[in-house]
Image (cartoon, rainbow, N blue to C red; front, side):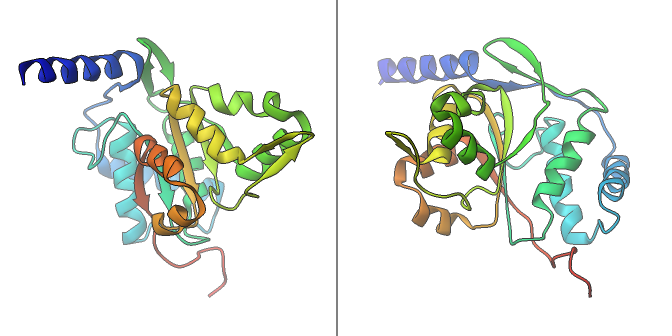
Length: 224
């Protein structure tokens, strides 16, 4: 048993040195943070409204980006925002991309410090890049230290570039998992639907890569 404990301990240490580690940005005021987010949100989309359900989601996001130990998840994983169309998932990632610049939040990967800058990449853009340029077209998405993959699950499942046939998103997620890279994403689908779309191996990678956060509420883009 002692030998097993040492092996497991060694595995944990390896993951910590070759994977992601977060840098805390504390203390902070949650009220001020939400006020800043509200201003950023309205600056991007005037229809943005900090309703109570929306506020609860942003509290989780604030905790995550500050690497607050109170975050109810695993800080060394990324984020997957889930919820129906129009609930503000992509907007939330746009807002937090701006919010993080206030403290210039950083994280550690392979013992080096990197800014938590990220681009939001639509899955169909990835698919088109593969169709145009094969694996070279999606290499950047497999290797960039931090990206946000938008609308996971809406992409074409199998695409071709000459003789190469690929499920692009599954490939990118598998590569990012293998390289232990921080990954964000959004999806319109609950995990049960994703489990029907992707095979067990990909779903396993999603659980390893992401904290799942669900956004609920009415589509604020539709007129009342």
